[in-house]
Image (tube, rainbow, N blue to C red; front, side):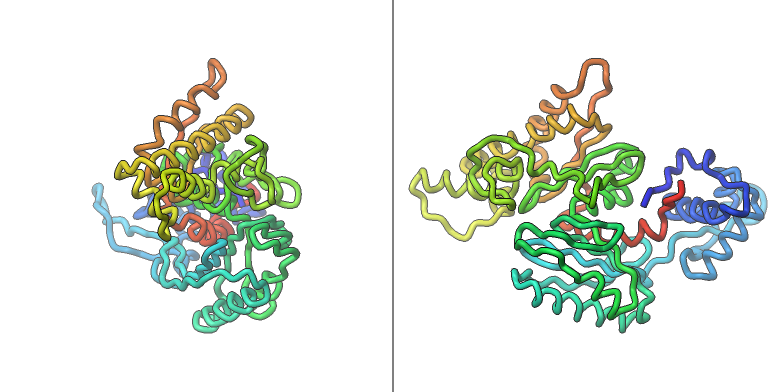
Length: 400
């Protein structure tokens, strides 16, 4: 689902009744992106007639999509009424499945999380199906029985158009029918997406202003594996059967510290993921004959920030491989921006110089530099991505 670029909206204004819905989407997105905003300001910025804007605004208020929030400052006449996207009312259910935990959340149209529940992810496929289905049914029953749309982020290969989940490599789940079961038992529409694509979509809707105003960018998700989301011309690129962007499996060497989710020790993921960081740290401790506790990735990053030598060395080695892979993507795809997402960005002050050094050497002569940014989505980017799947359906405009 393509995000409307407000900077080009004047070129997209529809004059024919047959595409009236496009004008509605443009008005809706102005309210979303620039609230609080008045009818007059929307008309001024879009060049739509004021009466057209008023009709659309009234419709959006009536169906509960936007709400009045008071009066603005007068410029000489009556004070204008200001509007924003309706908040606080359940509009979406987000399902975020990761190898460690699964989170199910209720969100409003503004993307705010109203409630959420997190539980451990089991390798037992049928158990997880029942756990997810039971919780989603409970939420839909309490909030309108089918009135909520659902977004589902999965660390695997999916066809977003058909809702098919072909393969979740971490557990070797294949041909998972959970989406059809959810739709059948709840009556709610569901959109499923690969976790990296969902996170890229979240960056497009909720990320840095520079990212939201960018037509072409890459999102690198560093977690148990390495995921890559590609956005071209404001739209997520998925490739055939949703398999586009699987750069985590490009060859980066032949002796990685851990197996990739596909079983190889040659993949970029096996060199640059959180699993690789953890393995390197434990190997360094073993080399110094130090007793190992139950250290986790978050601990290693915190230790590196505080200057502990083993954690710093493990992080440095992992980031070197991460940066080299990003370098290859910059050379091949020439994005305007690369966004790095995941817990590793907590140590951005430590890794920024290495990342920028690689980015600068990868840009061909005469081209503008690629901007590298840490994600602003926090520690749950894939959950925000699942919410974004629903909002993209509500606010996007595939026809544009």
